Image 1: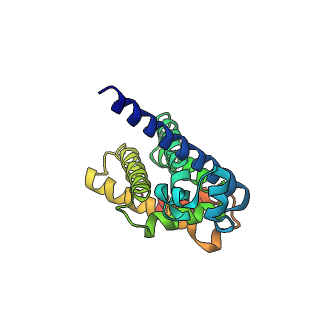
Image 2: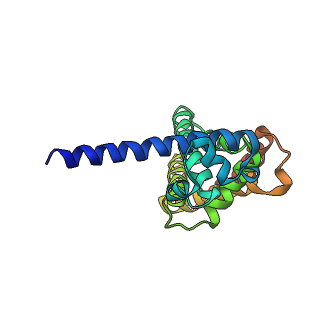
Image 3: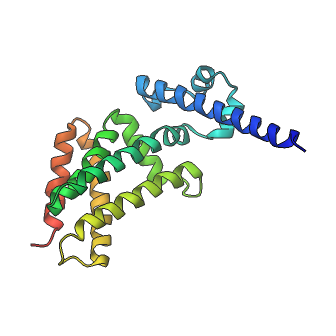
Length: 200
């Protein structure tokens, strides 16, 4: 009876090791070349696995990008939450939440835009897409909490405003006309739009 749990443990360890190799290979190749210039075969070769095995973990390059980027976006959100806690003003607190996400997205602009496209248009039932959407929901909850600091903003209005802020942020990061803008320019663009939304 003790053999079965050990084999399951070994199998799980092997799966995790392969997943770690896939993430490391995809991270390096995507950072160096951009997601559009990398093939799944290159990722499989670098991870020292077959492409069939790779497809057990992610069926498309978009899923691979989500696999790589979701953790980075979650870290950016946590940084934003920590920063926002120390800032009293509503607009400044919202922007403290937004800035690390924009910085994360703009690390590699094409990858950032592809990530947003995959998140928005991908299958919400697929685990990587679902995880990305969960990060968006958490970001909107954090933004709503910052907006609720203004006693004139009801819980319902805060949730709606947070959804709008999220849309503004994603559109500002994804739109083609903003490709050449710096992080600071994107943040200021978002700030101007959010400022108009807030109660006067």
